[in-house]
Image 1 (tube, rainbow, N blue to C red):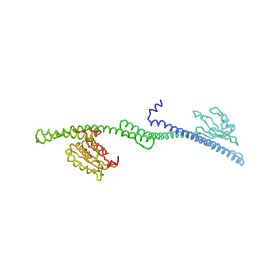
Image 2: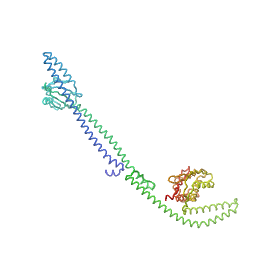
Image 3: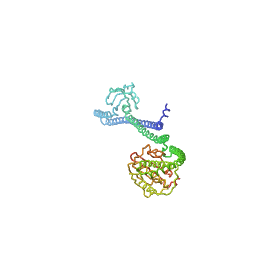
Image 4: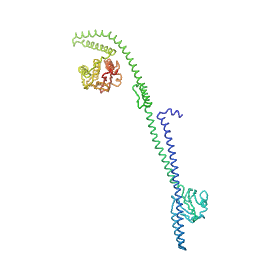
Length: 510
Protein backbone atom coordinates (compact mmCIF):
# COMPACT_ATOMS: atom_id res chain seq x y z
CA UNK A 1 0.00 0.00 0.00
CA UNK A 2 2.79 2.39 0.99
CA UNK A 3 4.86 1.46 -2.07
CA UNK A 4 1.86 2.02 -4.34
CA UNK A 5 1.31 5.43 -2.76
CA UNK A 6 4.96 6.39 -3.31
CA UNK A 7 4.83 5.27 -6.95
CA UNK A 8 1.87 7.60 -7.57
CA UNK A 9 3.64 10.62 -6.07
CA UNK A 10 5.45 13.28 -8.09
CA UNK A 11 9.25 13.25 -8.05
CA UNK A 12 9.44 16.37 -5.86
CA UNK A 13 7.09 14.82 -3.30
CA UNK A 14 9.16 11.63 -3.30
CA UNK A 15 12.34 13.60 -2.64
CA UNK A 16 10.69 15.50 0.22
CA UNK A 17 9.29 12.28 1.72
CA UNK A 18 12.62 10.44 1.53
CA UNK A 19 15.11 13.23 2.26
CA UNK A 20 13.28 15.18 4.97
CA UNK A 21 13.39 12.34 7.55
CA UNK A 22 17.11 11.89 6.85
CA UNK A 23 17.60 15.58 7.71
CA UNK A 24 14.98 16.14 10.43
CA UNK A 25 15.50 12.94 12.48
CA UNK A 26 19.26 13.53 13.07
CA UNK A 27 18.50 17.16 13.99
CA UNK A 28 15.90 16.03 16.54
CA UNK A 29 18.17 13.33 17.95
CA UNK A 30 21.16 15.69 18.26
CA UNK A 31 18.99 18.42 19.80
CA UNK A 32 17.45 16.03 22.32
CA UNK A 33 20.81 14.54 23.30
CA UNK A 34 22.35 18.00 23.61
CA UNK A 35 19.36 19.21 25.63
CA UNK A 36 19.51 16.14 27.88
CA UNK A 37 23.24 16.55 28.55
CA UNK A 38 22.86 20.28 29.14
CA UNK A 39 19.93 19.64 31.47
CA UNK A 40 21.87 17.03 33.45
CA UNK A 41 24.89 19.28 33.76
CA UNK A 42 22.78 22.28 34.77
CA UNK A 43 20.69 20.16 37.17
CA UNK A 44 23.76 18.71 38.84
CA UNK A 45 25.43 22.10 38.99
CA UNK A 46 22.42 23.86 40.52
CA UNK A 47 21.78 20.96 42.93
CA UNK A 48 25.38 20.97 44.06
CA UNK A 49 25.25 24.74 44.51
CA UNK A 50 22.07 24.43 46.62
CA UNK A 51 23.66 21.70 48.74
CA UNK A 52 26.73 23.86 49.20
CA UNK A 53 24.44 26.67 50.40
CA UNK A 54 22.87 24.39 53.03
CA UNK A 55 26.31 23.19 54.07
CA UNK A 56 27.51 26.77 54.28
CA UNK A 57 24.50 27.78 56.41
CA UNK A 58 25.15 24.91 58.83
CA UNK A 59 28.86 25.78 59.13
CA UNK A 60 27.96 29.46 59.51
CA UNK A 61 25.63 28.64 62.43
CA UNK A 62 28.26 26.48 64.15
CA UNK A 63 30.77 29.32 63.76
CA UNK A 64 28.30 31.69 65.44
CA UNK A 65 27.78 29.23 68.32
CA UNK A 66 31.50 28.63 68.67
CA UNK A 67 32.16 32.38 68.71
CA UNK A 68 29.48 32.89 71.34
CA UNK A 69 30.89 30.05 73.46
CA UNK A 70 34.41 31.52 73.36
CA UNK A 71 33.08 34.96 74.28
CA UNK A 72 31.02 33.47 77.10
CA UNK A 73 34.09 31.65 78.50
CA UNK A 74 36.16 34.88 78.43
CA UNK A 75 33.49 36.85 80.24
CA UNK A 76 32.89 34.04 82.71
CA UNK A 77 36.51 34.36 83.82
CA UNK A 78 36.22 38.16 84.21
CA UNK A 79 32.72 38.44 85.67
CA UNK A 80 30.85 36.33 88.20
CA UNK A 81 27.46 36.22 89.89
CA UNK A 82 24.31 37.85 88.49
CA UNK A 83 26.12 40.00 85.98
CA UNK A 84 27.44 36.85 84.26
CA UNK A 85 24.00 35.30 84.09
CA UNK A 86 22.41 38.56 82.78
CA UNK A 87 25.09 39.02 80.10
CA UNK A 88 24.90 35.48 78.95
CA UNK A 89 21.11 35.70 78.68
CA UNK A 90 21.12 38.91 76.63
CA UNK A 91 23.94 37.74 74.32
CA UNK A 92 22.36 34.35 73.78
CA UNK A 93 18.99 35.92 73.01
CA UNK A 94 20.65 38.13 70.39
CA UNK A 95 22.43 35.08 68.95
CA UNK A 96 19.18 33.09 68.73
CA UNK A 97 17.42 35.92 66.96
CA UNK A 98 20.21 36.19 64.47
CA UNK A 99 20.07 32.46 63.73
CA UNK A 100 16.24 32.35 63.59
CA UNK A 101 16.16 35.28 61.16
CA UNK A 102 18.33 33.40 58.68
CA UNK A 103 15.99 31.93 56.06
CA UNK A 104 16.76 29.23 53.56
CA UNK A 105 14.77 29.86 50.42
CA UNK A 106 11.14 30.80 51.01
CA UNK A 107 10.20 28.60 53.98
CA UNK A 108 13.47 26.89 55.04
CA UNK A 109 15.10 27.74 58.36
CA UNK A 110 17.86 26.83 60.88
CA UNK A 111 17.19 25.04 64.17
CA UNK A 112 19.29 23.48 66.95
CA UNK A 113 18.50 20.37 69.07
CA UNK A 114 20.31 19.26 72.20
CA UNK A 115 21.15 15.63 72.94
CA UNK A 116 17.76 15.10 74.60
CA UNK A 117 15.82 16.22 71.55
CA UNK A 118 14.78 19.62 72.93
CA UNK A 119 14.61 22.47 70.43
CA UNK A 120 17.06 25.02 71.75
CA UNK A 121 16.75 27.33 68.75
CA UNK A 122 13.69 27.27 66.47
CA UNK A 123 11.63 29.99 64.75
CA UNK A 124 8.33 28.73 66.23
CA UNK A 125 8.67 25.71 68.60
CA UNK A 126 11.64 26.65 70.76
CA UNK A 127 11.87 24.61 74.02
CA UNK A 128 9.73 21.77 72.67
CA UNK A 129 10.97 18.19 72.93
CA UNK A 130 10.72 16.55 69.52
CA UNK A 131 12.87 13.50 70.07
CA UNK A 132 9.98 11.22 69.16
CA UNK A 133 8.89 13.27 66.12
CA UNK A 134 8.13 11.17 63.04
CA UNK A 135 7.74 12.05 59.38
CA UNK A 136 4.64 11.31 57.28
CA UNK A 137 5.92 7.75 56.70
CA UNK A 138 6.33 7.14 60.44
CA UNK A 139 10.13 7.25 60.52
CA UNK A 140 11.74 8.82 63.68
CA UNK A 141 13.99 11.20 61.81
CA UNK A 142 15.08 13.18 64.92
CA UNK A 143 16.47 10.10 66.63
CA UNK A 144 18.29 9.28 63.37
CA UNK A 145 19.86 12.74 63.35
CA UNK A 146 20.91 12.44 67.01
CA UNK A 147 22.37 9.04 66.35
CA UNK A 148 24.31 9.90 63.19
CA UNK A 149 25.41 13.36 64.47
CA UNK A 150 26.21 14.64 60.93
CA UNK A 151 24.90 14.10 57.39
CA UNK A 152 21.92 14.53 55.07
CA UNK A 153 18.38 13.39 55.70
CA UNK A 154 15.34 13.47 53.43
CA UNK A 155 11.80 12.84 54.66
CA UNK A 156 8.15 13.70 53.88
CA UNK A 157 6.57 16.28 56.15
CA UNK A 158 3.07 17.67 56.28
CA UNK A 159 2.23 20.96 58.00
CA UNK A 160 -1.28 21.72 59.15
CA UNK A 161 -1.68 24.12 56.23
CA UNK A 162 -0.54 21.58 53.61
CA UNK A 163 -2.97 19.37 51.66
CA UNK A 164 -0.36 16.64 51.24
CA UNK A 165 3.15 15.90 52.53
CA UNK A 166 6.09 17.73 51.00
CA UNK A 167 9.61 16.33 50.88
CA UNK A 168 12.14 18.02 53.14
CA UNK A 169 15.90 17.90 52.77
CA UNK A 170 18.05 18.65 55.83
CA UNK A 171 21.77 19.18 56.31
CA UNK A 172 22.79 18.64 59.96
CA UNK A 173 26.13 19.05 61.80
CA UNK A 174 27.22 18.22 65.35
CA UNK A 175 28.34 21.08 67.66
CA UNK A 176 30.55 19.08 70.02
CA UNK A 177 31.07 21.85 72.60
CA UNK A 178 27.40 21.86 73.67
CA UNK A 179 26.52 18.45 72.15
CA UNK A 180 23.94 20.05 69.91
CA UNK A 181 22.70 19.15 66.43
CA UNK A 182 22.63 22.18 64.09
CA UNK A 183 20.14 21.51 61.23
CA UNK A 184 19.42 23.55 58.11
CA UNK A 185 16.14 22.43 56.42
CA UNK A 186 14.49 23.27 53.13
CA UNK A 187 11.53 21.88 51.23
CA UNK A 188 12.72 19.90 48.26
CA UNK A 189 10.49 21.73 45.75
CA UNK A 190 12.13 25.00 46.82
CA UNK A 191 15.53 23.35 46.95
CA UNK A 192 15.24 22.17 43.34
CA UNK A 193 13.17 25.13 42.13
CA UNK A 194 15.97 26.84 40.24
CA UNK A 195 17.19 23.53 38.81
CA UNK A 196 13.65 22.65 37.66
CA UNK A 197 13.29 26.12 36.13
CA UNK A 198 16.51 25.65 34.17
CA UNK A 199 15.33 22.15 33.15
CA UNK A 200 12.07 23.62 31.86
CA UNK A 201 13.89 26.40 29.98
CA UNK A 202 16.28 23.92 28.37
CA UNK A 203 13.33 21.73 27.32
CA UNK A 204 11.46 24.69 25.79
CA UNK A 205 14.64 25.99 24.13
CA UNK A 206 15.31 22.54 22.68
CA UNK A 207 11.80 22.35 21.22
CA UNK A 208 12.12 25.86 19.74
CA UNK A 209 15.55 24.99 18.32
CA UNK A 210 14.17 21.79 16.77
CA UNK A 211 11.26 23.75 15.30
CA UNK A 212 13.46 26.52 13.82
CA UNK A 213 16.16 24.20 12.48
CA UNK A 214 13.50 21.78 11.20
CA UNK A 215 11.68 24.60 9.42
CA UNK A 216 14.91 25.88 7.84
CA UNK A 217 15.91 22.34 6.88
CA UNK A 218 12.50 21.78 5.30
CA UNK A 219 12.84 24.97 3.26
CA UNK A 220 16.35 23.98 2.15
CA UNK A 221 15.23 20.47 1.19
CA UNK A 222 12.22 21.90 -0.65
CA UNK A 223 14.50 24.38 -2.47
CA UNK A 224 16.96 21.60 -3.33
CA UNK A 225 14.15 19.37 -4.60
CA UNK A 226 12.78 22.27 -6.66
CA UNK A 227 16.21 22.94 -8.18
CA UNK A 228 16.58 19.23 -8.93
CA UNK A 229 13.10 18.66 -10.36
CA UNK A 230 12.45 21.90 -12.28
CA UNK A 231 14.66 20.84 -15.22
CA UNK A 232 12.87 17.46 -15.29
CA UNK A 233 9.47 19.20 -15.22
CA UNK A 234 10.58 21.40 -18.11
CA UNK A 235 11.81 18.33 -20.00
CA UNK A 236 8.47 16.58 -19.53
CA UNK A 237 6.60 19.68 -20.76
CA UNK A 238 8.87 19.85 -23.83
CA UNK A 239 8.42 16.15 -24.56
CA UNK A 240 4.64 16.60 -24.39
CA UNK A 241 4.84 19.51 -26.86
CA UNK A 242 6.95 17.46 -29.27
CA UNK A 243 4.56 14.53 -28.90
CA UNK A 244 1.71 16.85 -29.91
CA UNK A 245 3.62 17.84 -33.05
CA UNK A 246 5.45 21.02 -31.97
CA UNK A 247 8.83 20.16 -33.44
CA UNK A 248 10.19 23.64 -32.64
CA UNK A 249 10.05 22.97 -28.87
CA UNK A 250 13.50 22.63 -27.30
CA UNK A 251 14.81 21.80 -23.84
CA UNK A 252 16.88 24.36 -21.95
CA UNK A 253 20.47 23.19 -21.52
CA UNK A 254 21.80 24.61 -18.24
CA UNK A 255 25.07 23.48 -16.66
CA UNK A 256 27.01 20.34 -17.53
CA UNK A 257 25.38 17.64 -15.42
CA UNK A 258 23.56 14.50 -16.59
CA UNK A 259 20.26 16.35 -17.05
CA UNK A 260 21.93 18.96 -19.25
CA UNK A 261 23.55 16.19 -21.29
CA UNK A 262 20.17 14.46 -21.67
CA UNK A 263 18.51 17.75 -22.71
CA UNK A 264 21.20 18.38 -25.32
CA UNK A 265 20.79 14.83 -26.65
CA UNK A 266 17.02 15.29 -26.85
CA UNK A 267 17.44 18.57 -28.73
CA UNK A 268 19.80 16.91 -31.20
CA UNK A 269 17.31 14.09 -31.68
CA UNK A 270 14.49 16.60 -32.26
CA UNK A 271 16.62 18.50 -34.76
CA UNK A 272 17.29 15.27 -36.65
CA UNK A 273 13.59 14.36 -36.65
CA UNK A 274 12.68 17.87 -37.80
CA UNK A 275 15.27 17.77 -40.58
CA UNK A 276 14.02 14.34 -41.65
CA UNK A 277 10.46 15.66 -41.76
CA UNK A 278 11.58 18.66 -43.74
CA UNK A 279 13.42 16.36 -46.13
CA UNK A 280 10.30 14.23 -46.45
CA UNK A 281 8.21 17.31 -47.14
CA UNK A 282 10.80 18.59 -49.61
CA UNK A 283 10.93 15.26 -51.40
CA UNK A 284 7.15 15.11 -51.49
CA UNK A 285 7.01 18.68 -52.76
CA UNK A 286 9.66 17.95 -55.34
CA UNK A 287 7.63 14.94 -56.46
CA UNK A 288 4.57 17.12 -56.76
CA UNK A 289 6.56 19.74 -58.65
CA UNK A 290 7.93 17.12 -61.00
CA UNK A 291 4.43 15.89 -61.70
CA UNK A 292 3.21 19.46 -61.99
CA UNK A 293 6.06 20.26 -64.36
CA UNK A 294 5.18 17.39 -66.64
CA UNK A 295 1.51 18.36 -66.48
CA UNK A 296 2.27 22.06 -66.99
CA UNK A 297 4.41 21.35 -70.07
CA UNK A 298 1.63 19.37 -71.66
CA UNK A 299 -1.05 21.85 -70.64
CA UNK A 300 1.01 24.80 -71.84
CA UNK A 301 1.60 23.17 -75.19
CA UNK A 302 -2.03 22.19 -75.64
CA UNK A 303 -3.56 25.41 -74.28
CA UNK A 304 -1.18 28.14 -75.42
CA UNK A 305 -1.91 27.58 -79.14
CA UNK A 306 -5.73 27.82 -78.80
CA UNK A 307 -5.29 30.78 -76.42
CA UNK A 308 -3.08 32.48 -78.98
CA UNK A 309 -5.73 32.05 -81.67
CA UNK A 310 -8.46 33.31 -79.31
CA UNK A 311 -6.41 36.33 -78.30
CA UNK A 312 -5.54 37.08 -81.95
CA UNK A 313 -9.13 37.01 -83.17
CA UNK A 314 -10.31 38.93 -80.07
CA UNK A 315 -7.74 41.63 -80.73
CA UNK A 316 -8.72 41.70 -84.42
CA UNK A 317 -12.44 42.08 -83.58
CA UNK A 318 -11.69 44.65 -80.89
CA UNK A 319 -9.88 46.76 -83.50
CA UNK A 320 -12.78 46.47 -85.97
CA UNK A 321 -15.56 47.47 -83.54
CA UNK A 322 -16.08 50.97 -82.22
CA UNK A 323 -16.14 51.30 -78.38
CA UNK A 324 -19.84 52.18 -78.44
CA UNK A 325 -20.76 48.95 -80.20
CA UNK A 326 -22.84 46.64 -77.92
CA UNK A 327 -20.54 43.69 -78.80
CA UNK A 328 -17.35 45.60 -77.93
CA UNK A 329 -17.52 44.80 -74.20
CA UNK A 330 -17.94 41.06 -74.93
CA UNK A 331 -14.91 41.05 -77.17
CA UNK A 332 -12.97 42.96 -74.51
CA UNK A 333 -14.04 40.40 -71.81
CA UNK A 334 -12.93 37.50 -74.04
CA UNK A 335 -9.55 39.16 -74.50
CA UNK A 336 -9.11 39.85 -70.76
CA UNK A 337 -10.07 36.33 -69.63
CA UNK A 338 -7.87 34.77 -72.29
CA UNK A 339 -4.92 36.76 -70.94
CA UNK A 340 -5.82 35.54 -67.47
CA UNK A 341 -5.78 31.92 -68.59
CA UNK A 342 -2.40 32.48 -70.20
CA UNK A 343 -1.06 34.00 -66.97
CA UNK A 344 -2.27 30.96 -64.98
CA UNK A 345 -0.39 28.67 -67.33
CA UNK A 346 2.70 30.87 -67.06
CA UNK A 347 2.44 30.84 -63.23
CA UNK A 348 2.20 27.06 -63.25
CA UNK A 349 5.29 26.85 -65.40
CA UNK A 350 7.09 29.41 -63.25
CA UNK A 351 6.31 27.53 -60.03
CA UNK A 352 7.09 24.11 -61.41
CA UNK A 353 10.23 25.16 -63.24
CA UNK A 354 11.66 28.13 -61.39
CA UNK A 355 15.25 28.29 -62.66
CA UNK A 356 18.19 28.49 -60.29
CA UNK A 357 19.08 32.15 -59.67
CA UNK A 358 21.87 33.72 -61.67
CA UNK A 359 23.74 35.61 -58.94
CA UNK A 360 25.47 38.91 -59.38
CA UNK A 361 26.47 41.67 -56.98
CA UNK A 362 23.44 43.96 -56.84
CA UNK A 363 22.65 47.32 -55.24
CA UNK A 364 19.37 46.42 -53.53
CA UNK A 365 18.38 50.06 -52.89
CA UNK A 366 18.79 50.89 -56.59
CA UNK A 367 16.81 47.80 -57.67
CA UNK A 368 13.96 48.51 -55.25
CA UNK A 369 13.94 52.18 -56.28
CA UNK A 370 13.22 51.20 -59.89
CA UNK A 371 10.52 48.72 -58.79
CA UNK A 372 8.82 51.30 -56.52
CA UNK A 373 8.80 53.86 -59.34
CA UNK A 374 7.26 51.32 -61.70
CA UNK A 375 4.68 50.08 -59.18
CA UNK A 376 3.58 53.61 -58.25
CA UNK A 377 2.11 53.99 -61.74
CA UNK A 378 0.42 50.59 -61.81
CA UNK A 379 -3.37 50.50 -62.13
CA UNK A 380 -3.67 48.20 -59.05
CA UNK A 381 -1.95 50.84 -56.87
CA UNK A 382 -4.47 53.66 -57.31
CA UNK A 383 -4.91 55.57 -54.08
CA UNK A 384 -1.88 53.88 -52.50
CA UNK A 385 1.07 56.01 -51.45
CA UNK A 386 4.42 54.20 -51.57
CA UNK A 387 7.04 55.56 -49.15
CA UNK A 388 10.67 54.41 -49.41
CA UNK A 389 12.91 54.05 -46.36
CA UNK A 390 16.22 52.79 -47.71
CA UNK A 391 19.19 52.58 -45.36
CA UNK A 392 22.22 54.41 -46.70
CA UNK A 393 25.39 52.42 -47.15
CA UNK A 394 23.51 49.14 -47.49
CA UNK A 395 25.96 46.41 -48.59
CA UNK A 396 25.53 44.98 -52.06
CA UNK A 397 23.91 41.55 -52.20
CA UNK A 398 24.53 38.50 -54.36
CA UNK A 399 21.14 37.84 -56.02
CA UNK A 400 19.25 37.35 -59.28
CA UNK A 401 17.89 40.79 -60.16
CA UNK A 402 15.04 39.52 -62.37
CA UNK A 403 13.80 37.03 -59.80
CA UNK A 404 14.05 39.55 -56.93
CA UNK A 405 12.19 42.07 -59.10
CA UNK A 406 9.42 39.48 -59.43
CA UNK A 407 9.36 39.03 -55.61
CA UNK A 408 9.17 42.78 -54.91
CA UNK A 409 6.48 43.47 -57.56
CA UNK A 410 4.38 40.55 -56.30
CA UNK A 411 4.55 41.75 -52.67
CA UNK A 412 3.87 45.39 -53.61
CA UNK A 413 0.84 44.47 -55.75
CA UNK A 414 -0.47 42.17 -53.00
CA UNK A 415 -0.20 45.10 -50.55
CA UNK A 416 -2.04 47.32 -53.01
CA UNK A 417 -4.79 44.70 -53.31
CA UNK A 418 -5.19 44.74 -49.51
CA UNK A 419 -5.87 48.53 -49.63
CA UNK A 420 -8.80 48.94 -52.11
CA UNK A 421 -9.77 52.22 -50.48
CA UNK A 422 -6.20 53.52 -50.54
CA UNK A 423 -3.50 53.65 -47.91
CA UNK A 424 0.23 53.75 -47.37
CA UNK A 425 2.88 51.18 -48.23
CA UNK A 426 6.27 51.58 -46.57
CA UNK A 427 9.21 49.82 -48.26
CA UNK A 428 12.25 49.63 -45.95
CA UNK A 429 15.75 48.24 -46.32
CA UNK A 430 18.17 47.75 -43.43
CA UNK A 431 21.18 45.73 -42.34
CA UNK A 432 20.13 42.59 -40.48
CA UNK A 433 22.01 40.37 -38.02
CA UNK A 434 24.69 37.88 -39.02
CA UNK A 435 25.64 39.28 -42.45
CA UNK A 436 22.10 39.74 -43.80
CA UNK A 437 19.93 42.51 -45.19
CA UNK A 438 16.21 42.90 -44.59
CA UNK A 439 13.48 44.23 -46.88
CA UNK A 440 10.18 45.10 -45.21
CA UNK A 441 6.87 45.81 -46.97
CA UNK A 442 4.54 47.39 -44.41
CA UNK A 443 0.99 48.30 -45.51
CA UNK A 444 -2.05 49.79 -43.77
CA UNK A 445 -4.53 47.43 -45.40
CA UNK A 446 -7.17 45.04 -44.16
CA UNK A 447 -4.73 42.55 -42.68
CA UNK A 448 -4.81 38.75 -42.84
CA UNK A 449 -6.90 36.56 -40.49
CA UNK A 450 -4.83 34.26 -38.20
CA UNK A 451 -6.27 31.12 -39.76
CA UNK A 452 -5.07 32.27 -43.20
CA UNK A 453 -1.54 33.15 -42.06
CA UNK A 454 -0.70 29.46 -41.58
CA UNK A 455 -1.66 28.63 -45.20
CA UNK A 456 -0.71 31.84 -46.97
CA UNK A 457 2.38 30.31 -48.69
CA UNK A 458 0.70 27.07 -49.75
CA UNK A 459 0.28 26.61 -53.53
CA UNK A 460 -3.21 27.35 -54.86
CA UNK A 461 -4.35 28.85 -51.55
CA UNK A 462 -5.82 32.33 -52.09
CA UNK A 463 -8.24 34.73 -50.43
CA UNK A 464 -8.85 36.62 -53.69
CA UNK A 465 -11.91 35.95 -55.82
CA UNK A 466 -9.84 35.77 -59.04
CA UNK A 467 -6.40 34.72 -57.71
CA UNK A 468 -4.45 31.57 -58.61
CA UNK A 469 -2.85 31.11 -55.20
CA UNK A 470 0.64 30.80 -56.72
CA UNK A 471 2.01 34.32 -56.26
CA UNK A 472 3.25 33.99 -52.67
CA UNK A 473 4.25 30.35 -53.22
CA UNK A 474 6.51 31.45 -56.10
CA UNK A 475 7.78 34.37 -53.99
CA UNK A 476 8.80 32.10 -51.12
CA UNK A 477 10.36 29.64 -53.56
CA UNK A 478 12.55 32.37 -55.04
CA UNK A 479 13.56 33.70 -51.59
CA UNK A 480 14.47 30.21 -50.34
CA UNK A 481 16.49 29.58 -53.53
CA UNK A 482 18.47 32.67 -52.49
CA UNK A 483 18.97 31.00 -49.06
CA UNK A 484 16.79 33.70 -47.54
CA UNK A 485 13.72 33.77 -45.33
CA UNK A 486 10.31 35.39 -45.68
CA UNK A 487 7.97 36.11 -42.77
CA UNK A 488 4.52 37.69 -42.57
CA UNK A 489 3.09 39.47 -39.52
CA UNK A 490 -0.47 40.72 -39.75
CA UNK A 491 -3.33 41.94 -37.59
CA UNK A 492 -6.83 42.15 -39.09
CA UNK A 493 -7.86 45.78 -39.61
CA UNK A 494 -4.38 47.16 -38.87
CA UNK A 495 -2.23 46.03 -41.77
CA UNK A 496 0.44 43.54 -42.76
CA UNK A 497 4.23 43.48 -42.69
CA UNK A 498 6.17 41.12 -44.98
CA UNK A 499 9.89 40.82 -44.19
CA UNK A 500 12.39 39.27 -46.58
CA UNK A 501 15.81 38.47 -45.13
CA UNK A 502 18.66 37.74 -47.57
CA UNK A 503 22.29 36.73 -46.91
CA UNK A 504 24.79 39.21 -48.30
CA UNK A 505 26.77 36.39 -49.91
CA UNK A 506 25.05 33.06 -49.31
CA UNK A 507 27.72 31.10 -51.19
CA UNK A 508 29.89 31.53 -48.12
CA UNK A 509 27.26 29.55 -46.19
CA UNK A 510 27.35 26.54 -48.47
